[in-house]
Amino acid sequence: MGYEDEIKAGSAKHAPPADLVGKFQYGTAGFRMKAKDLDAVVYRVGLLAALRSKKLNGQTVGVMITASHNPPEDNGVKLVDPMGEMLESSWEAYATSLANADSDQQLVDWYNNLAKNLRINLDAPAKVIYARDTRASGSRLVGCLQDALSATGAQYTDFKLATTPQLHYYVRCTNTKGTQDEYGEPTEKGYYEKLGAAFKQAMEHHKTSGGLVVDCANGVGGPKLRELVKYLPTAAEGGIDIKIVNDDVHKPDTLNSSCGADYVKVNQRAPPSSKAGANDRCCSLDGDADRIVFYFLDEKNTFRLLDGDRIATLAASFIGDLARQAGLGDKLNVGVVQTAYANGAATMYVENNLKLPVICTPTGVKHLHHAATRFDVGVYFEANGHGTVVFSPSALKTIHTCQPESPAQADALSTLGALTDLINQTVGDALSDMLLVEVILAHKHYRCADWLSSYTDLPNRLLKVEVPDRNQFQTQEGTAERKLAQPQRIQDEIDKMVAKFSNGRSFARASGTENAVRVYAEANTRAEADDLAANVAAIVKKFGAVAGM
Ligand code: NG1
Ligand code: ZN
Image 1 (tube, rainbow, N blue to C red):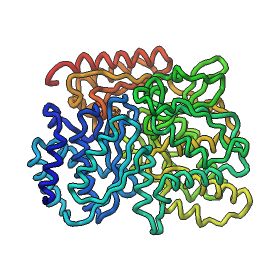
Image 2: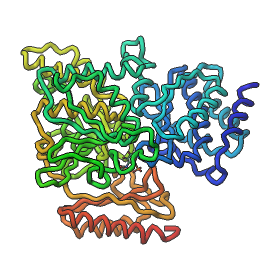
Image 3: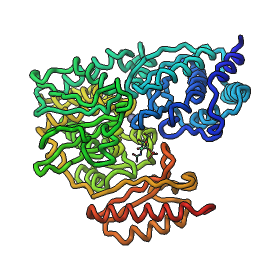
Image 4: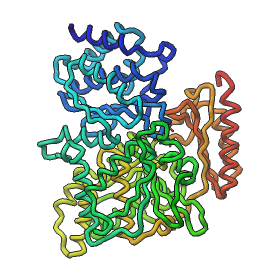
């Protein structure tokens, strides 16, 4: 059989639900929906992965099957580019069009057309690697993917269960192996060894204090963290006293259920299962371990959240200090990248106290990551705990070639060098970020309460509003999603409402991952923030329901 017949045969086996054809969209997190509806989409993403690899001269492309913090019955799929970054954005539209082909023949035609328009040699080799999280539907979807890869003649490797950031790491390692940009061993062991060695180096002369309870959302982070721990110094050796909770991957229904980073961030409370006492340091990962938030109960038993904004400010302040101590203060420009969901107090703290520049981008890690590469050291985090720190090639060279002039400088340089390995350079990584936070707290002799005291969050509220058509909601170019261009009436009403609150800020935007509009509000007091959010949500609901606005 020729490839066209093979593609058609595979496509016939994995037909999309008819009522969804035309509605699939590759969004900020790839495709994400009920797992039962995803077979055809995954099959078609497999075709695109092969095309992408062929276009890039046979460099390895990644495919991750996960729905992150979504409920267990969902799943999703996204592509990873050769350096471990998100798929180049121009290709998102190709993914969307392939997913929406409405017949096997049309799918082959679009495949061939894409190859022709993008000047892809279909005889070129293709290499694809893939992995999945712990969802029950994952192995069936891997089957759909394999069918596509076989039909295109791509070579492929199954990395089985992995966290999303592990797969990004494997992709980059595979493509850089044997080059001067070698990133690490493209194996699970290689990943743990790299993090373990970097953590040890960063913790030289330091030790952590108190334990850390890690809620793994009953997802893939649980077993992977258990493995990672084997490569870290023990608590007696000055390492972290880690207690792993919510790591049951055998009861699929428990995934992200009343636990995990999203639950904690959205509800602003600890998982009900948490037994943490006052001042115990806790953190929660999400279902694919690319997000992390920290929290603790203070002396008054009040829940205190240390979210992505807090990790960003902690990391930026630490790295800025290290750069100065290493004598590189004027050679490394450190900056922070946030989205409109960052707390206003965090932005002010970075600009006014840390005196570092802040860039605000639209939601979605690809936007943040891209902006972060404009700095020598770019710290980017979404408030929900997804983020990392990227070091530019010239920053790496500066750090690795600098000759220290004192023992203090040598120490700072060694820690800085260790951070470049400890921090996953490809994408936000909950396990790597967890170690980063532990290193910083140990160096600063901080308890969670000290970390929290650097600034006071403005009270805020995030709400979700169901609307008949979220696509009506278009944000204004250049406002990083803080203003709507359409429907204009809604933006006018929001502006009037915000003006009634002192220090009020609120915006509405269509979610890229759910069929809803998100409303964010912050104000001087808890009651005002809640009030502002509720009022803006009511505006969105009232005017968003009017057809043709
Ligand atoms: P949407 O649904 O577009 O708001 C959410 C998160 C993003 C990002 C993506 C991908 C919020 C407010 N939004 O996007 O930050 O993480 O999911 O997972 O948290
Ligand atoms: Zn995730």
